[in-house]
Length: 208
Image (cartoon, rainbow, N blue to C red):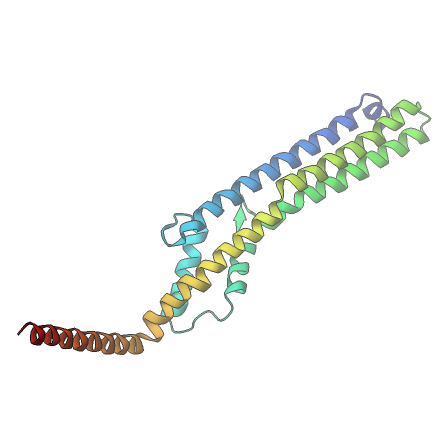
């Protein structure tokens, strides 16, 4: 079957529709994955997710080895950018929609020009071009609705917030400032104990 028959039987238009469907399915898959991960990071300390557990364990290990994590944001970015789903990086999955957009535009333009050069009817030529325009609009709409890049940013912010504002201070107090903390606790309890004893003596004296 040559290119002319493909165009006349609208196989090119069907191919463009198939590319749109693939892009839609991929975007739905990515969105579902990101939303599931967002639910997991709401309680990172007890999360069962492989990536989240790995990040927390690595973060703890850095502090237990007295190294610390000076740049928490970069630490989180490294893990998220290297996270894979079915062998591909998540950012690669996100870029599939752009790749499909290029295929649709190039395919419709090529088939439209070829049909015009072969002297096919105006209806066939315009059908190829309009299919590309319509498919481009659909792909842009999918990108806008799915908004996976925003979900990725939310995921990064939530993880950074937990590690920076909850996990990091706790580990620093436990490992780096343990002596100061214990000294403060002793001073606090001695002071409160003395005040309570003085208050008890004052009550006893008033009672007599």
